[in-house]
Structures are given as structure tokens and as C-alpha cells.
Length: 144
Image (tube, rainbow, N blue to C red):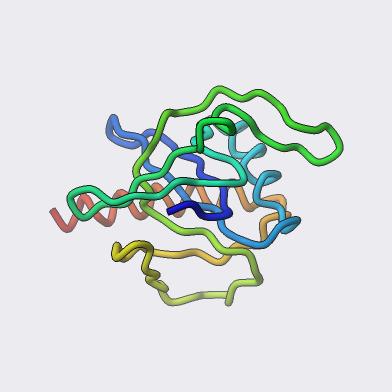
């Protein structure tokens, strides 16, 4: 399945863990991805993401012609080092979150994932996303 989204990942415990950045055109998906790349994240896909499941887990990658490309408004399409694929462990959606939100699970291709509402253009958005992924990983490790 191909979705209109971006996919960035960070390495946690030796594996790439990705956040699927959803939202309508112009909401800041690529801008957020670009800022995350400056914080050490790796691009997996920008604008379009091919999603699939394996062993109850969700994975994503860029369609062939878009691999290694990232759109930066005002600059055009830029080359970016990109992962061939990664596991999707969280969904990020644009908006104004509640001050202290309850975890909101969402379903993608039959896989339940945590979701986070984030104002993409807010200066702290990359830091919040990074901390949310790390907290998710730590919480999952405690359950094992």
C-alpha cells in the first residue's frame, strides 16, 4: 500500500525504528523530516511511503523513483542519504495536541501503533518526536 506521508528513523538498540509522518500536502511533513535529519535521524521516504507487514510488524520504504530524495520548499528536491527500509513503530499526525494527552493507538494495515499529534512547524517538534520514540522503546523493553 502506498500512502502520502514521510518516514524517518532513528537507531535504537541496533535497529532502525521509524516514525510515519502523516498529513495533507503543505502541512510541514518534509520540513519536519529535514529538521530531524539534522538531529541524526535517517530518511527512509519523503512524500510517498510503501507500507507492508511482516510477522505482525509494519515496514516502510520509498518508491524506487523517490528513494534518496527530499523536497525542501523554496529549494526544490534535494538528495539525501536514505535507508532502504525501516520498521514503522509510531505514527505522527499534524495538529495541536492536548496538554497531557492519553496514548492514542491507531491501526495501519492491521498493525496497532501508538500515535502522536504534533504541530510540525513548532521549533520543538523534532525534539518531541525523538523523545517520544525513545520513550516508546524504553516502555516496550520493560514489557519484555
